[in-house]
Image (cartoon, rainbow, N blue to C red; front, side, top):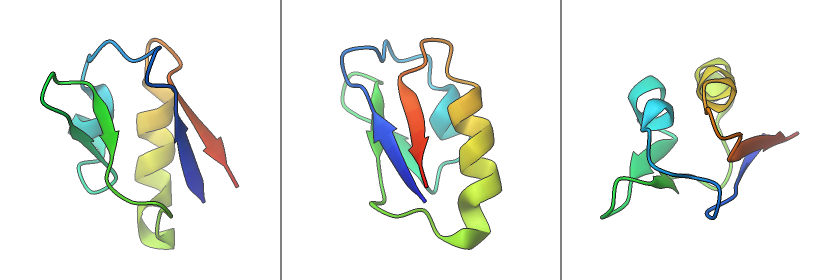
Length: 63
């Protein structure tokens, strides 16, 4: 599973990296930064919850 990030839509709420710090992290401004290119199977449920929690819809899943 891969995650797509729309940098322009992210305003830095931080829900993604709070819910899944192994997949997402903050950049210097607190906006989302993807930490992995491919989400491991063990982290996929957590990553899906983080994507669903993004209020701007800046994250999407590519299976």
